[in-house]
Amino acid sequence: MGSAAPGKTDVADSGALTAPGLRSWSPPGGRFTAWQETALIGTLDDWERITGGLSRWEIKTRSGFRVRPAVEVEAGQRPLILVTLAGLRIREPVEVVQVVCKTDRVGFSYRALEGHPIRGEEAFIAQLTPRGVELTLRSLTRRAPRGIWRILFPGLLVAQRVARWRYFRALRY
Image (cartoon, rainbow, N blue to C red):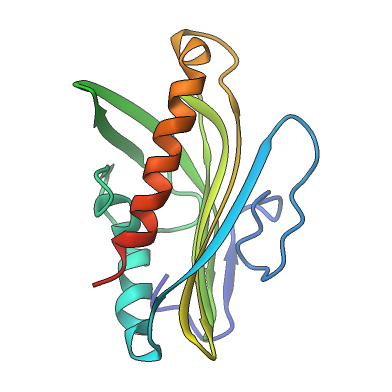
């Protein structure tokens, strides 16, 4: 992701619902709960460090998750994200849907696969602005179709809020 040519956008599936390649996002209607927030996380001098960390999954690993395999983010990749919550090891299989690598915008989105506690998609986007480097998080979330996670969904929403707070802190130094 960090080594792509300026202006290149790698799209594994042009149907990325969280549209990380676009500055403006209009969430799709339907059964998903949409969420987006942007925060200033660094200066222009931090761009390379932030986007390099983003391309190596540091937004997740610095937030308490493990990513297997721990390789650079690539479209079509299917890593397993692991987290321990209240003594319970949670497996989150995902697929990277879209990777964006432009001179002023770097990010990716992934969708939850079967076995993930929720259904949906999440995007992490760093962008250069006159103020510095901003991080935008986008997500579409809904209850899993069956199983224990369906019952635990309200608790998962609380955990998701905590994770988002950690994401915004993850790439700041």
